[in-house]
Image (tube, rainbow, N blue to C red; front, side, top):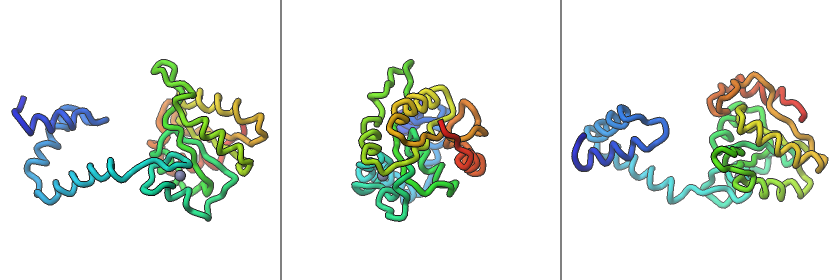
Length: 197
Ligand SMILES: [Zn+2]
């Protein structure tokens, strides 16, 4: 539609999740008319995120050091571990202020249709963490959709023989939805009302 750099930018923006062609065009023209210092700051933030952000060696949350902020915090409980699909779910649960334990980020959910099996997730690393014997409750906070439920069921079968209490967030979360879109109160209540599997 356009030529050169502006079309390149529209194409790149259009590849981002949740950005349709109209939004891509709007953002591109905003960039064109915006203050150069603002755009330099945006460009710097984009490159910095790829250079500096990595995954925590323990829980696979996003981190700027070897371990993430939560794993480095000595006040967090060692006996409760909450399993989530993505780092954004850690943020969602932290916002509820219901949980003072630690996390394990799987990096997705079991999805046979897309060829994602247990081996593609950080389940081996989870089992290694659980084998230390410090964790007494494992909270399965995968998304309340088909893939999230399948993952929770799979993990419950794997972990229960270890004598660890396995819990799942209570209902009340929108079925078929993403954890990150639940409001703090709903998610907080679901956390409080978690049930043993
Ligand atoms: Zn961590």
